[in-house]
Length: 193
Image (cartoon, rainbow, N blue to C red; front, side):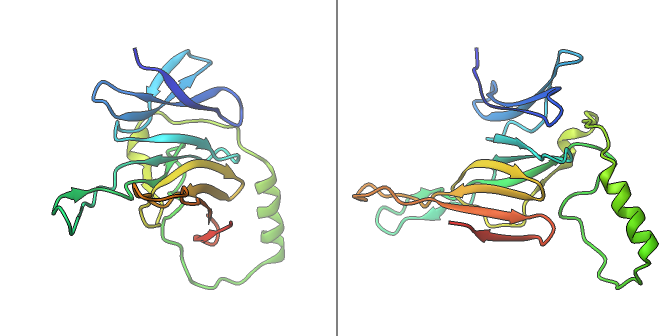
């Protein structure tokens, strides 16, 4: 029996996303729908963990341990693997684009009436929903370098996580983590603290 860990409710409190170890020994993100009382495996069993719903209801963010790039040690000439995690975005609805899809850079004339209409439409929030069909095919990695990451959380338009440097056996003090933020609008990663 595998335990459920790292659970979080959706913005409408109708879905629970959680991490659970699978039969292959790796973790995956699962979704439990309260209305239908059904469980769906939302990600591959590849070390996916730390789910966090986007408060706007478009994405489920998480970390995945799928970046395997061994380095050769210079003393024992054996391989070690570090920096295996990368933030991922799971697009919850089939009609939404990837948060990292290419954008047009063409300048368009701004009509004040159209701009006002867009603002009004943005205020009308669509009800939260998850399209389960094809869900695992809508996972996209963040365009950031792989690292040793933990602790994903999401705010409106921003995703946060901790970056933890690799430690050695002779470190007298534990290395200090840094808080990272990714701005989905600007598509930029930065260190917060």
